[in-house]
Image 1: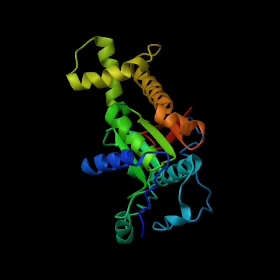
Image 2 (image 1 turned 135 degrees about the vertical axis):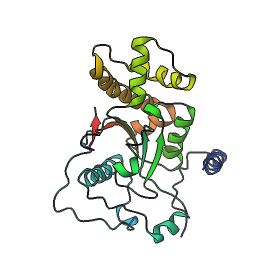
Image 3 (image 1 turned 30 degrees about the horizontal axis):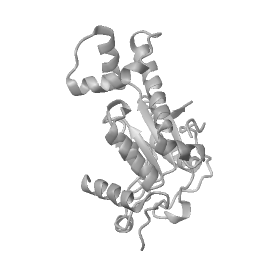
Length: 249
């Protein structure tokens, strides 16, 4: 079977080769879909290996698939899809993930579990507090430009420790270790000083993920695809209490 990695003609061959070598060696904002919305009772179960039958090519399709997976996860009806020996062999030829998920490093919020997805489904990028740096931006750009992924979901979560640390440092002036200070400095502009205590942390989580979404959607490599409707960059939040993901406008 030929490689199922999609190659955009607009990207120069030398650049494609460089990006693929680097990855191999190192191992439209606010779409309005509630990710936690219940699926119709008549929805047919999926064939976990029928990739070609339900290939995702649009941002709306990608959001719907994430919504369905999160519904299964939070109702404890997980399918654990795309783990078969057949699919593992097939993925040797290439990958075609349908979404990039930029999430936090928090061990309670693994994207493949939260959205009940399997091998080859998601390109996951994780940094504490969803903080952007060149490595994160390059990883997301690889998914969008090289693999032509139609959706970038920035996934924040309830009780984010990185945001709490940034708020605490801002309030007290206490020094942070150098690398953690970098994270706090990136989050600090989003701190909601109109709130107090836990409410400040909670509001800052939402403000920060919206700001990350805004910055990504404005990236020159991504903005044109957003404007053309080929890509959506969406902010969302995972609630630890009920395991539901909700989009943020």
